[in-house]
Image (cartoon, rainbow, N blue to C red; front, top):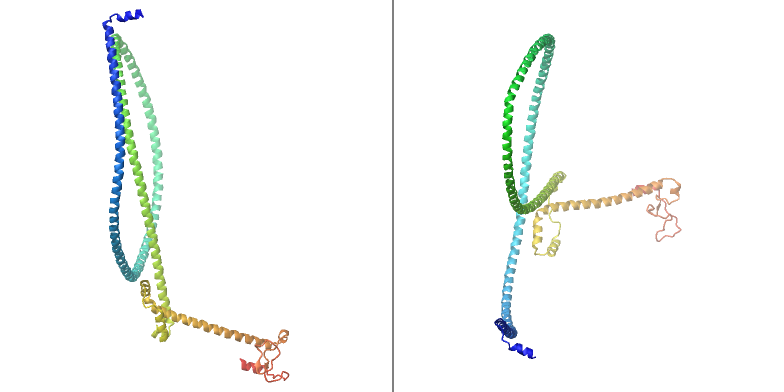
Amino acid sequence: MSKKGKKAKTPLSPEEQLLLFQQKVLAEEETAKKRERLLSQFLKDKLAKEENSSALNLNKINTQWRTVLREVKTRELQTDIEILSQTFERVVDCKDNVIRSLAKDLSEAEEQHAHALRSHLHNIDQLLALQRGRLNALEENYNMELETLAQEFETERKTIVDQHEKEIRYLQDLFMAMEQNHIDSEYESKLEFQSLREDLKNKTLEEKHFLRLQQENVVEDLWARFQDALKRYTDATEDRKVAFEALKVKDEKSSKEIGAQMKRILRLQDSIVSLKDKIATHSRESEEQNQHIREDKELALAQLRKLKTQRTQARRIAQGGLVKLTLESDATLKALRKTVDKGERILTLAEICRKFETEEEKVLPFYSSALTPEEQEEIEKAVPEEFTDELAKVTADYTGMENFWKRYNKVRLEQLSLQCRRAQLAEVNDKLRETLKQYLNGISVSEEVLSQPNPLLMVNYRSSLSQSSSTPTAPPGRAADTAPNVVEAAHVTSHSL
């Protein structure tokens, strides 16, 4: 302890005093920082509490204010709904009036369309008649022109055939004359060819001998020239040796210059490498740009393909519509042709039937009503007084067919009456056939006929043709054992047939 006290009493060096002062300053700064941290934390906590309380109060105020606004808004909405309901009812009434007017306009338009359609059909019939007349006139003109052309063709054909036969005869004569001339000229040309061949053969032999002598002289001349050239070459090579030595010295100098040029070439190669790197970078950049351009091009091509597909689809749809239109038009034309043919057939049949009409039918073709006045009144009562629009249209369309239906009904009634008359006559015919059969069986003699009752016998003034039993029945008032009266068969047949 005494040693420690002695050490504490010893004076401190300036460095130690400086260190101690710095420690004190640091400790004071740390305490000040701690106080500031505590104060800032306290203020932050207080601020957070205030913010929470202010947010809670603000929410309460907003909820109360919203309830007030809702009540005001509900009142406004109720008034708006009442106004809108009134306006809606008014608009509905207006629309109903518009619909009624449009329905009326539509009915009028339909009537106008029906009238226009009837007039259009009438015009079409007139146009068809005009077209048929025009076609008949054109057909007559065509037949006349065809006959004239056929006559002209026959005359021209005869002249051409005659001229052709004349030319063929002329050419045959000319061919025979040319063939004779060709034979003569061929014989003469053969003679000339043989003579020319002998002459050419002799000339070639002479020329061959002359050329051989000439070539021997040329070879001797060339040998002399070769010897002279060899001598000149030996004289000229001495000068060339001297020139070779000079060129050798010049070659050493040029080798040194080549070394220097090689170094220069290396430097240039380095610069070329650097330039190649720059070119590669530029090519990469250009490649990227080209890639972007290719992508844009592909997008444009895709859009172009899409547009082409849309165009082809539109064309296909339009073509399908056109095909459908042509098919429908063809079908309508065929239907119109059928109706026209049917009408023409009806008209021809009417013309044929007109020949078989009686004088009464020709004078009075349409009979009046066969109904009595009472029946006519009953029909008028049964028919409603007011027709609907559709029924009125239908009756208006068929008013022109009343005379046709009168004649048709008359013919139909006559047909039915004839059928009934035919049935009655067939029944009478069957009865007569049966009677004749019984008569023939009665006059014939056979075991089968004898085993059955004879139909030709008369019993009590009655024939037994239709009776099935052989025993006659006695008339009332007579006894059953009385003898029957017998009448001959000839008398019966004379009175029955």
